[in-house]
Image 1: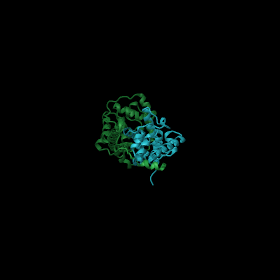
Image 2: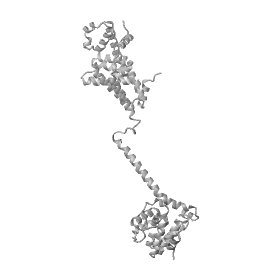
Image 3: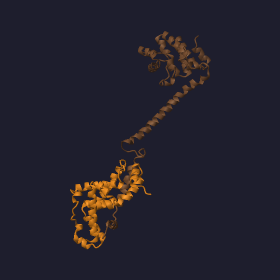
Image 4: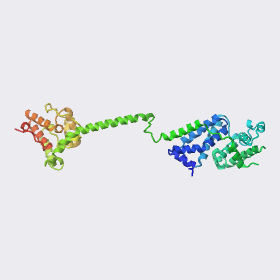
Amino acid sequence: MEAPDEELMLAYGGGDAGAFETLYGRHRGGLFRFILRAVKDRGVAEELFQEAWVRVIEARSRYAPKARFSTWLYTIAHNLLVDHWRKKGLSLVSLDGEDAASESANPARHAESREALARLLHALEALPAAQREAFLLHEEGGLSVAEIAAVTGAGEEAAKSRLRYAMAKLKAAVDGN
Amino acid sequence: MTDDGDISRRYRELAREEPPRHLDDAIRAAARRAVGTRPAPLVVPTGRQRWYFPLAAAAVIVLAVAVTLHVEREQPEEEIVTAPAATPEKPKLEQPGSAPQPERRRKTESADSRESRNAAPPAELQKAPEAVPTLPPAPPPVARQEPPPVAGAAARAAPEASAQLRRFDEGVRGVPSLSASALQSPEQWLQGIADLRKQGRHDEADRSLAEFRKRHPGYQIPEPMREKVEKR
């Protein structure tokens, strides 16, 4: 049986570098995609991704498993994204509840893409930032609605609503509606 | 119609972007460094702690040399003291506080002149020769200087501490004392007594000879030297 993330993080805090290797291997892909799809810029995503792990490393001795490790990890990433948007004068929450008129949501591009996966990807990019974040936390981080609420600082109802809206829009995109 | 599970499945079929290898390596290295520096601070000292190690090594070497030299200097005297241990007179020396002898010595001393007190200090001075700072061999008792009266009074009032102070004072001033004589070899000590006889200072010579016999009860004084040191 595999050791839970929290146990690995505690082991790493105690000086076990191998525990970090395992932990990193489990979460590197999901966290990277979560950040990449939020910022849509590979260079920025790499920078934020590295910063997130540096914060994990720095906090190793203070870590206390009050919640799941992934909740803590994605909270760090969420806060980095918020800082990133603030620097750029944007906000994750301001886009909540309204469709972003992104280029990828352009109907012409939709028409060109005949594959459902491509439509899904485009629809994902077209989602409002908060809904996209809720969806990515659910899919990449494996977080529950309550955990999404905890990570984003929103209420559980808001998190649930964002996730429901995101799912509905992605379904519609895949179905070609 | 797709459901939530289908969306999740389709999402996972999307391109699976991964962080680049160099980023993985950098993060893993940082993680190892973070925990690797803690358990072995003595191996790779950094910053201000760098100079602790040479300093500690130098201090250990100096201490080792000092102890070795000290032990080498102590050894000859130990041999002199331990050799006659089997002789019957030894117990008298080993019990300075029990017999009336120290008391008698004190009375004798108080009756003597201050000058003779310098030559024959209280018996307490001779109890712990190993505690006496290393003094050079005492020169023949030719030129003597009076110690300050305060030092003499202090020596009588507080025997051990004051005695040590006085011994040091006398050693510095070059005035011979029994404790200084005790640091000499028996031959040197006897020669000093012979010199006193030559100078006609027989009282001092007698006291010094008596002290010599207490300190070296088993020592056989050679006949030629005996003629020089004993009262004629």
